[in-house]
Image 1 (cartoon, one colour):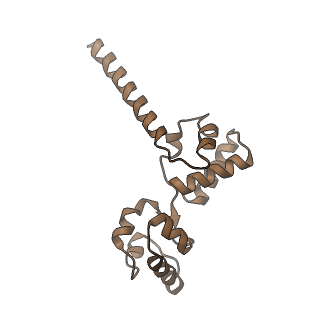
Image 2 (image 1 turned 90 degrees about the horizontal axis):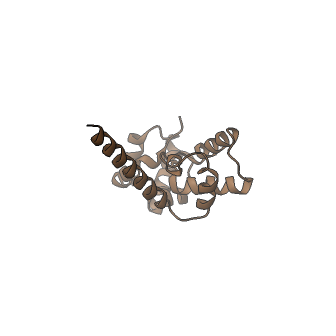
Image 3 (image 1 turned 120 degrees about the horizontal axis):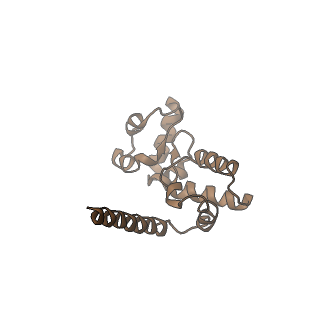
Length: 154
């Protein structure tokens, strides 16, 4: 019984270490990756940092909070981290995004992004995902694929 418990603990630790290594290696390359690993990795696993998507503003607030808690980095490093996180693990606020931002982040065509901009202009802020899916000229399937990447003003 005791040996089985030890074996389970060793196996769990091995799996956790393997998953951690895979997640760390899975970080996309790009400017800011090295800074993220250096600054954020000092206190906790980087995969913990990127576990949830946030808007650019959300990432800025998160970084400010970490600095207040003692994270050390230059202004340049922190700016690169914010840009890296927003690009690779960001949410896009469809009520403030530009057409090109929607095209890039959500994989929309120029025509679809323009349809959302025109809808916002006519109807005001989009309240939720269901309303966004009903914007004429936009593929609901494309939006569904990126649902976790979309944010709305509240």
